[in-house]
Image 1: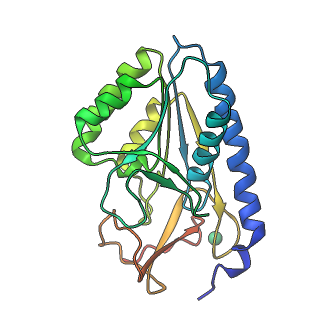
Image 2 (image 1 turned 60 degrees about the vertical axis):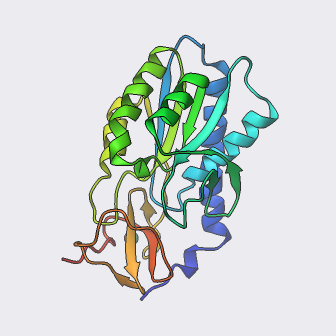
Length: 231
Ligand SMILES: [Zn+2]
């Protein structure tokens, strides 16, 4: 099968990094000038390798370098048992990383939204089902208090469907930022889907929606024409 070699070099990285940098700069400026009494909610979506975590990591460094006045900032992600999602750490495909709080309970979610003015969450699609409703309630209260919320995650799965929590959050967000990678097969923009491969072969549709990468299970960005959902 065709490999992603032709697109996986410096060109693809520059393409992704440029867009991650400009999004990070945009969010940084918004956070800096956002009045404390006006809540704001931005969601970043896109396929894997599209620079979502990279944008958050760059935002972290900008906020660290020149922190916004009178605003406490926290970076978080759901705690999940997956080797690609490290506890208390947000990591991009470039292996860059930043410290973050991994949350796994309602009391942690409440504390995060109550103790901070700017809450930034990566891998939002991995929020456990039994925490989603509570998360949404606390998020609305946070926004009503003037909080600034940014989350990033996959909105489409490798079966061609949507992840439900990001789909819901997109209907509540004030701004949706789409990032995209390039299709590993044809090189066209890939803004939604990841192909799940098992030892290089497209996976069957009957597999669960949520499966982390392993030595044999891998994911690569694909455009809608090149996504294969095997029945
Ligand atoms: Zn394609």
